[in-house]
Structures are given as structure tokens and as C-alpha cells.
Image (cartoon, rainbow, N blue to C red; front, side, top):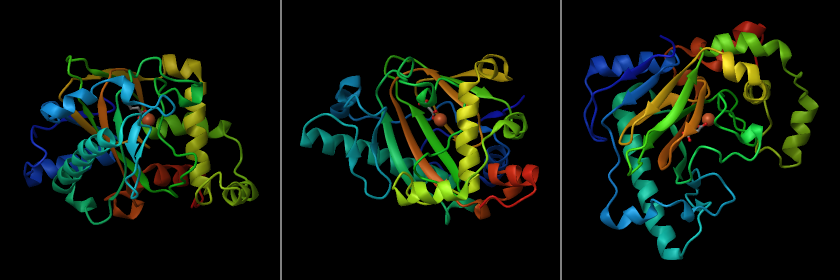
Length: 293
Ligand code: SIN
Ligand code: FE
């Protein structure tokens, strides 16, 4: 079965993980699989249960999140005290996710850079405003304003739903199959345009050709209705009280429904992978026969 969704019997964020499981985790994630922890939930404290309501969102951004290193709370509507309490909850999740990753994938520990941590209290079904922002369409992640220059996007998701509703995902075909399909259709990279977008502040650094390709792959996948319907895929309902981890720049994924999710994003340099050749950068460079960063 592709993609492999591999279950791990880890039920505590602070568990110690034996060598064989670590090996399986590394092999699964680098081959484009999803690490699935059916019984790893995130405990809310009594006084935090009030945050399980969509009204805490400011309605403008899809998620409430703590940003990168700054750690200021974005997308939130509420009092200063409430903001502090929710930020503390999100920060606790960030710490537990990081702890688990360090234990499960120790080979990445020294190179992993923690980025945004989000809380998603809005129903995932029907929240999109445009096809490009519609995460219920299969896609690989790419950041329009934050070029990664090949760095991997690693994400830790946890379904907090108090009514026992799953996070309904679809997971698609292997990255190389998708890339072969869409690469011939992408617009050419224009270095001068990447420079101009950086100078104008549209991107935080200059888009490399890699970033250009990853963004246009994301768009091409989402814009293709036939691909969405007929490409190889499987439905995966992640139950309430479960956690899953994947490289979301590699795994084709779509969120069809569900409510109340925590998510931690981390960035990983390609050089920290055991096998950089299986990364999107490695795959694309091989297919195109040239360096992309
Ligand atoms: C996504 O990363 O595309 C959405 C994941 C989710 O909210 O379940
Ligand atoms: Fe995504």
C-alpha cells in the first residue's frame, strides 16, 4: 500500500522509544509515509476546555498560531488573559511534539528547527475561500512567502476533537509519480522575477528554482479537478485522541473534515536526511538533471 500509514504503539509524549522503532520511524517518514499514533492524545486542563470553540478565531486567518521564533499569538480574538492561556496550551503542545520527535527521530535532533505551532478550532470542511487555499484538495505543502530552499517541512498533527469526530484526510500517490505527471506543465523559473519579489517584500528571501517548482506543483495539483477525483488515493480518518507525523512537502494530503487540531511545523535541512535522494529536492533534481538551489 502506498502511502504507508504505519502505526506506532507510543501512547505518551514522554515515552522512550527503542532502537527498532526509531529505525522504522526514520525509514517510514523518509519513504513518504505517515507515522500514526492511534493512542497518543493531548490532554487539555479543565480550565482549557473553553478553548474548544470556533469563536476564538479572528475569522481572518484559517488558524490560530504561535509564529516561528517570535511566539506571538496570531489569528486570535479574545482578551489578553485568554490569549496568554491559549498561548500556554499551544506552547505545551510544541514542547511535547518536539520531545517526541527527539526521541523518535534522534538523527534529526541537532538539525530540526521548530517553526509555527497552530491550533485549528474551525471546521475543516468548507472553510476555503479559494481553490488555492482549499486544503480539502490533495496537495503537497509549499510556503509562498517563505522559501525553504530545499529544507523539509515536517509536521506533527494531533486531533483534539471532544465529540470523538475524526480528522478526515485523503492521502495521495507517491511524490515522484505526482512530479512526473505535473513537471512538464509548470511555468518556467524566472530568476529576475524571484529577485523582484524578494525586493518588493513579497517573499522573505529569494525564491530558488526549487521553491518555484514546489509552489507550482501545489497549485497544479489543486487546480486539476480530474487529478483530485481520479488520482490514486485513500481516505484516512484520524480518530480523536490520535497523532500523526509526516513530511507534508512530500506526502500528498487533503483535509476533508474535522475540528480541533493542534499542529507543529518544523524545518529540516536536506543534509540531515539519511537519504537526501528521496526528498522532493533530490527527486526533482534527478528528474530535471540540474541543481535547483
Ligand atoms: C493541511 O495541512 O493541508 C491541512 C491539514 C489539516 O488541517 O488537517
Ligand atoms: Fe497541507
